[in-house]
Every structure is written in structure tokens, then in C-alpha cells.
Image 1 (cartoon, rainbow, N blue to C red):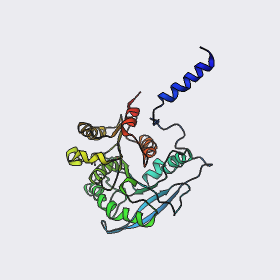
Image 2: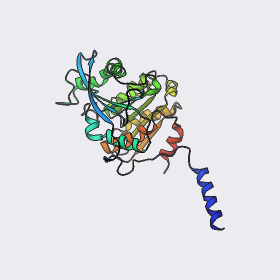
Image 3: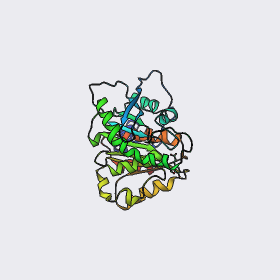
Image 4: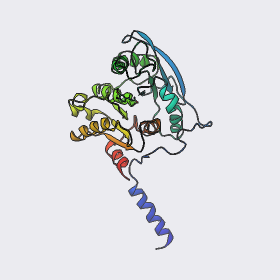
Length: 290
Ligand code: FER
């Protein structure tokens, strides 16, 4: 075969066999390293009045590079773990760097990211016995604070799209459990749901989703966990229940334990799917393949 025929054949074959959506399985090296030359988003600290808790509460808000008040943006609410607060992702997960780098490559739909404090109680700091009953219960109370106090505040103060298709929720560990609990209970409010290494606060599947077919309305239902994480059973049982009920979702088992290496990779992958036309089944198949 002469060279030009071989080249043409190669070209045709590559076009035919490139899947519709190619998707990294792991973030590439340098994905979380700040590039001075790239445009940066901005982090604000906001304070909102919580009727639920009866205090002024804090959250961080990341607006994307090139943010304009005249544009309306979709919103991702990104939740922390049991030992964290509104700064945990920012300090340990550097979402602002990961997302800046993805924007620089044109890989994200511009969105606002809100990093709340998910421990909805008067003293919401991660101090003392972080596993105490009142502190753990405060993670459940946050559902009310989020829906009735924080979301309305964000929607008043920032130029945001308010339909469910433009609202996402994700979180790590306790925040992953909150995400699955709140997201699946409020499918009328969230269309994009991502539980990373979800903790034992994840409700039992029957209680979590008594009417499984409702979850067909989600644009994305993402469940991920490190293969060395002892909390795997909570993700697996949720995914198993969804699979038994034929509910489209992504169950992504990745190398790693219960740590930010895994959660940064999750944010890198999950954020690229948000607010786009995606095919969960196709992505799920890619994440499973060798
Ligand atoms: C538990 C083990 C882990 C638990 C919570 C966690 C409430 C949460 C871990 C995290 O958020 O990193 O038994 O019970």
C-alpha cells in the first residue's frame, strides 16, 4: 500500500472510531498548578442571613474568568467534609486553579461555584469533637439553610439562571452524602448531582429515592469513590440500587483513598460535564473501559 493511501485510510478510520464524547479518566499532570498567564476567576466571601440557624453565615463564591454582571450563569453548590468548613475546598482542593485551567482550555461552561458551610448550627466551626451528635445533625439541617436561605441569597446577589437545569450540587464525603440526600429529595431544584466518596450520612437507598424513576429527570447523577476508601459501601449500595432500577447514572471507581487527590480529580472530571448536552451512558462506558 502506498503511503498516501495508508494515510487517507488512517484518517478515515480515526474519524469513524473517535467516540462522540472523548473524556479523560484522570486529570492530567499540572491540572492543579496555577498558570500565571491564564485569566483567573475571583473568590469572594459572602455573608447571608440564615433564618434556619438564626445567624449570619459565610460562604465563598468563585466567579469565572471574564465574569460579567450582564450575563446569567448556572450555579454549582460544592460541599465540604466532616472536618471542613466553607474554606476546605479552597484550601485543600484549589478549585479556583483547577477551574481556571479548564476555562483556559475552553473545557467548561461558565458557571458560578458556591462553597457553603454545610454545618448549619450557631457555632459552625470545625472544632472540638467534629463527630458529635449535634455537629453531625447540623449537616442534615443544612438542607433547609441551603434551599431557604443560601440559594435565594445567591439568586438575589448574583446574575444566575434559576431553573433546575442550571443548578448543580456536589460534595465530598459528608458533603457527598448531603448531595445525594438533598439532590435526590429535590429533583425539582437540582438537575446535576455529584456525590464524591459519600459518607455514612447517605440515606439508605429506599429512603433516599423511594420512587426511582423520578431520577430519570436528572441530567447527571454522578457517584464516585476511591478504590481504597473504606466508605465505598455507601457509594456502591447507592449505585447498585440505581442499576437495579435502570436509572442512568455514572459510578466511577478510581484509584485512591479518602483524600483530596481523589476529590480534585472528581471536580476536574465532573465540572466538565456540567450544563452541557451529555450522554451519561456513553461517559459511564468510557470511565469503565481499560
Ligand atoms: C463516619 C465516617 C466518616 C461518619 C462520617 C464520616 C457521621 C465523614 C467523613 C468525611 O466527611 O470526610 O462514621 O459518620
